[in-house]
Image 1 (cartoon, rainbow, N blue to C red):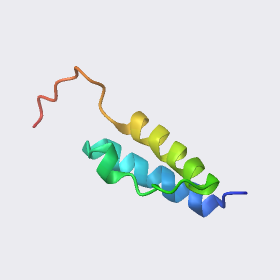
Image 2 (spheres, helix red, strand yellow; image 1 turned 60 degrees about the vertical axis):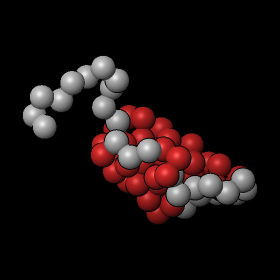
Image 3 (tube, rainbow, N blue to C red; image 1 turned 90 degrees about the vertical axis):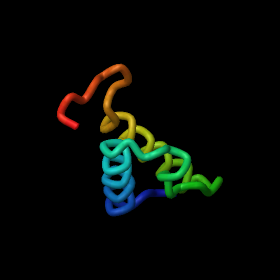
Length: 63
């Protein structure tokens, strides 16, 4: 099983988008299958989500 660059890029972009907007992980993650491809894409998505999400305890005074 090999992921294409487009699949990897799509997972990273979707994860960054969801993380930066604080969307719930369970609702925003599009990779719910149990096959190896979905698991690999889910891992990429979650890593991008966590990197883009604001750190807990950080107060946004601009809102």
